[in-house]
Amino acid sequence: PISLEHTPKLARAVASATSSAQRAQAILRGRRTTLHELRSLHGTLRAQALAVGEERSLEALVTLAEWWSARLEGVLCKPGGEGRGPSRLVRFLKDLANEAAALGANPNALVPPRPRTVEGGRSGGAGDDEDESANQPCPFCTGGEDLRDPAMQSWIGCDTCEEWYHSECVHVSKQQAESLETYLCPACAHKQGVAYAFRLPAPPKRTRRPKLRLVRALLAEAETLSVAMPEVEPLSILV
Image 1 (cartoon, helix red, strand yellow):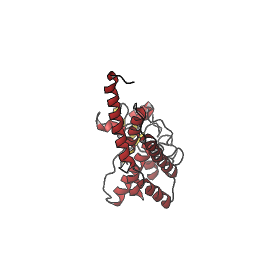
Image 2: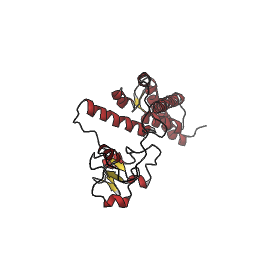
Image 3: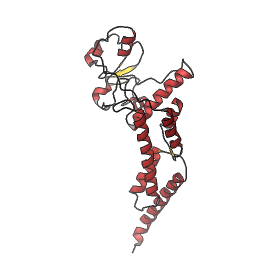
Image 4: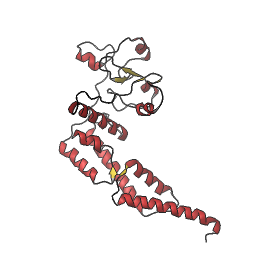
């Protein structure tokens, strides 16, 4: 038997379960949602006191969306190459799409720069830029680095191409960086026919070259999901 003192708690549990179930039903009927919202709602369904029938169907949709993302990563990225990991894959595709748009639509368009960061903090102070520039890869990252490592927070910028690199990746120590008046990156040194002043980094592992029809098939498959996959928009620009 349920005592009167439990009635308000039960009523709140019923209301919460009903609201979550209605949101889940809308998604399962085709309402577009983000993967973040989908995971959040699935977590809510699992944590609430009352089980609802939509939980398993929502879990299957989460699994399907994550499987699609993993398959896309496997098609596009070499082991240890650029773009490995969901957030890095999206950022890598956006970088490529921005570069393609800048070169194709407007040769003078500015591609958003990589974080202009130096030892001890990011230029411009704290704020929104800090969140955007944290833990980002540089052109010589191989994919196996721990971008949260303090050693990966020191950056150095090329005075010729204005690209920025982890000091660790281009083998420039903090002491060496502080003594430099100008810095020439490996790519610009090669273009100018001069020796790079430090130990050459290993060439970055690039993406695979998948067949166009396979990528288009994955894009078409993504359209059948109720989930707005973040990889779709930049990938559509590239194909």
